[in-house]
Figure 1 (cartoon, rainbow over the protein chains, first blue to last red):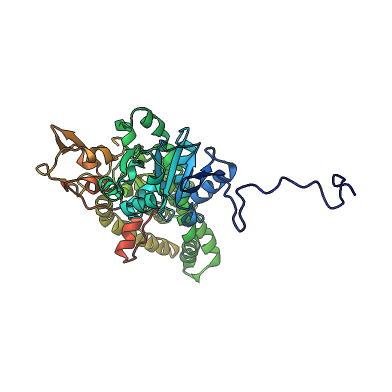
Figure 2: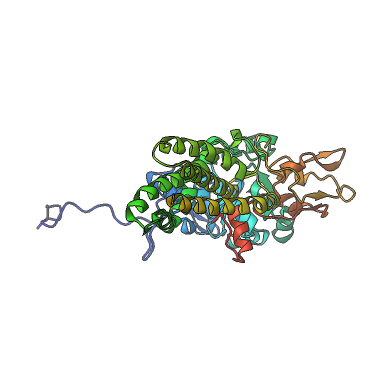
Length: 368
Length: 91
């Protein structure tokens, strides 16, 4: 039988195994190819994100397996870099890594990924994993000095919280250049002779960046929702007949509506409208947003229930909104720990006191 | 960031101008334009804008800046009050 004749078992065979296939290994989808350098193979990564990247970004934005969203630390590259190409240092959170490879907008560069345990640059710097020691360790592990003609590392400016530029130089001989806050401005930074303008140095918190953080806030709430709802329906059923399932259902739904209103105003409206809501303390901003939403809920229930119940629901929405808004401090790039602690010392007792008052009002109203 | 303001007087940032050499490193790493070099010495020009990230103190070559750094995050502070170690908010 001639070899080119059609055989019975299936369509013609595909191409032979590629040069980057190794027994037991699989090439990650963001790797275009593996290039050879003086110190070993280096993955050349794609600079355009694919559907799978966008899908996993959406997933971690909802807090799902966010703590395991990382790439292996070490050296990568974009384009075809040589001994004179810049070295960009970043965190091994895949979201950070994706940003760098897709927005660096350089024809060629080395990307040195340090092990921040899958945490973004700024948070890792704050926690001490994006540190002087870690940068030095990765510079040595990648043996950058063996094939680079220069001794410069470009670090994101926000890593300065954890990295001391002069200590990096002292320990491995590389000079740290503080790059702009946003990787998208790197090209302009380099073209401008490595000089950052004031705007490149300062963090911002625009509408879209605030909104993109909302799902993670909601994912924390969803985790606590089952027991909170159980308490809501249980409290709503207590009355003159000891416990009534009828009351638990109807009054429970009203309270669940107030709960949803608190989540809406504290975790969605407050972040979205942050600069326009009066007050500086986040708990206060949450109170105003909660008042607005609570009044709307109270207005729709006005004819169906008593004044005391409407007041209880309004207070519930406001207290919850205040607490959730206060929690958003952790997501913002401008609140100081001293300030948050100062705010919480006043706000937490007020929020919990209000919740206790709500419970008392709610149960009392059922006996009237 | 002038369009976002948090509480006033909430920062532990202290600059010792006598020690400062005016190298400008703090101005470069501050994400909020809190420090500026004026007349060859750093100056705190927006104390209320400080979020205590600690970048300036960490990179000052002469130790002229003191700040008690941390993450301004309610969840992290609650966890610290509850005595939970390492349970910070951001991941």
